[in-house]
Length: 296
Ligand code: ATP
Image 1 (spheres, rainbow, N blue to C red):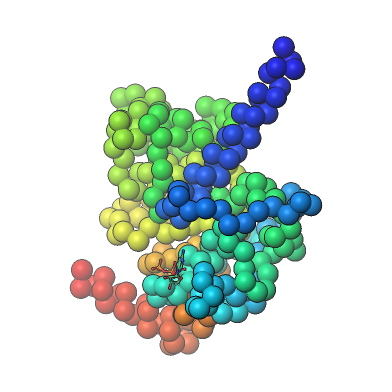
Image 2: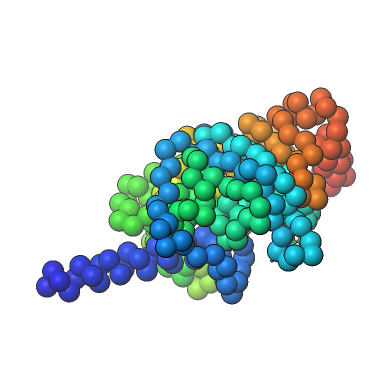
């Protein structure tokens, strides 16, 4: 009996891990049909995250040889700090997050986590170390409990509730007639963009990864919802290294460092206050967004 159930249990775990990675990747890149271009080296080892420091060392990258998208990006995200990448559309922000997930390999240079080159570690261990809070969380046609518990194998009811509380979605769930048993997804209760995102945050908190990648929603949320999500994200960021891909500047003013990317190059970096004082690219992006908000 043991001989039969153990391999099946193992297969179940492998299947679950692969599915989790697929969901993370699909959520992150909005793509399911894109082939994985990278393979583990035969001697690849599991990534060991001790502190969670991320280093981009003169990273160059091209999707196709004619056009370089990242032109020598060097950046260190210290363990436990939050770095936000901002910049015009097409400047290469999402490309950096794809490379960190090793969806592609860098063309030149290297990306390291705690000194380990991403090309030397197994993809399963890399994906287990990085939690993704995507723009658009994929919900399964199942209960809200299942949708949160999906973040971690064997999560208890108490774990699920704790994650939901931290993600500021517990009160909402408690008010539903069926609570955590409420069916969501296409065939169940339709959640708003903000509610879905908080389910995604709860799921990621349960996964408890040392590194977080946030792909900030482009769509404008109402102020109350945005405040709730910001609070949830501040909670989620505690004790983790965070890379935020920011489309709106209002949400990243508290980041430890803001990096301005333009045409595949870092043109400015510093804190919100430092960059405003510098009166350069960031300051003009900030003024433009503030004017747009006032107009709206
Ligand atoms: P946005 O703010 O609009 O999301 P971004 O700064 O995240 O933009 P990226 O998605 O990183 O920009 O794209 C950088 C450049 O790479 C763009 O010129 C884009 O057209 C190009 N690019 C992105 N994905 C691919 C791909 N799969 N194949 C070829 N070129 C791509």
